[in-house]
Length: 256
Ligand SMILES: [Zn+2]
Image 1 (spheres, rainbow, N blue to C red):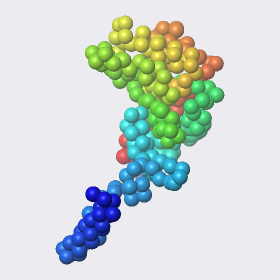
Image 2: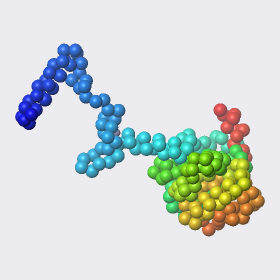
Image 3: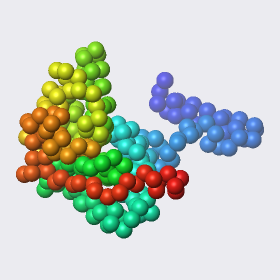
Image 4: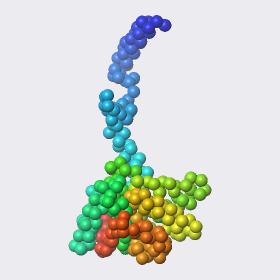
């Protein structure tokens, strides 16, 4: 068909379509695709000639990272609550720690001391800080993984049966937040061997890592041995922060 003819046919069809829509009382754009994001028409990009990611795409990416990083969005520095501290001394400590952790998070991916060792008794807010650091890192677009030592061991075991070792991811992710270190089962020939491989790789590469444990350095040595414990608490690259305050759990329950 000659080009001229095609053009004519198309405009005739458009007029016909318009007339039909009008006849049935439908709007002119009735047959146009409906976009869930009118800004970018669902392409994910805006701007001409320089293309930028659209807000809808950035939001989706953020959601993906929150899921992949296993972040609790309610436990962030912005949600730090002074009223859950049972006394002045604990509150003062909580604030100081929060500031230190925020500084660390804002300096990621390369803080001066790439490792944090957060330790102290249960219920002092250690996990909250670990989560808040991870959430801030994700906000800044840093690839982050947060999980418990228990879950890490489980995933390593699962990797054996599916032939997909998660070891590389644990060893190389730019920020790893490893929570509850010391509560997982020690599986012979697995837990310590893998933990050493991960800890050693991250220590050597100075990769940002937050270790969270109810155990102090001596107890850590007793449980995992010197070569693991010394890398986690390595003073040349680690800031160790002890949570000494009173438990926050009682107050949290009361305010629920
Ligand atoms: Zn969009």
